[in-house]
Image (cartoon, rainbow, N blue to C red):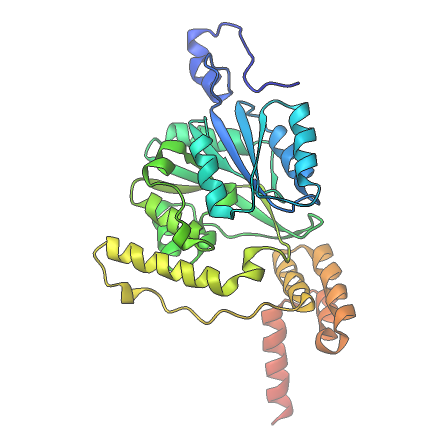
Length: 344
């Protein structure tokens, strides 16, 4: 078995700071608690956990919170925990994400809480880079990272455009952009999360914006520019399955934040209606276009073909455009010009 903080060698005084960052501590509490909610995650779970175990900073505990999975997830977790005693598995009946996270927060032993989703990937330097940042910026209560959006097979679709400063992050949160600080990529100060009483059940599905807006009122938020996290797109995500509830709860959290700031809740941004859940071929076409714009031509071609095969009448132009490397906006403008020229 591997332990995350078994080093007993005395540390020279001039190396104390570095030793603390790299996990060489004398007490038995880990510096970081990783909260990983798990529900029906057998397909990607082992890969996600292995990415945590491979971190360059190893003074952590991984608290795997199984939410009553009926697939192989519990067996996978128990096997992984038998291999590495930094993993603690907590099983329960199906209680939902917010309850899971609050239970994990109550049990966390670390000075910091790192979030991690059971189908995503953390790059090896993630925890180390985030911890160095928080140690150097005591006013900061949470730091996320740059994020690659990937498909179910880890093909890169695009790198998300994430703001760096507190004011930019808070402004985007107030506009309803929950991706201003990617929840699953973030490292939080445990005491800060507990001081605001964690996640609120009444904002479930929109709990991330609510959490981050309340954290922004007690400290600073930040993002590292490096892309240290892979956010896997799949059709089971809340964005695909609970779009209306997510938007409604986000809007409610924004209105309440305005009230706390002494502002008119009716000044909350008016956002366009939620688009109904798209068919698989429409999602694949979207991924193809995003990947093309981001310069990931192989991913773009892969999903252009999938979309065309699924709905050839709707997407027959997409493979042609992708193979030619013509981006969506340029294609639209060229088509408009051609139509104007023909109409003369």
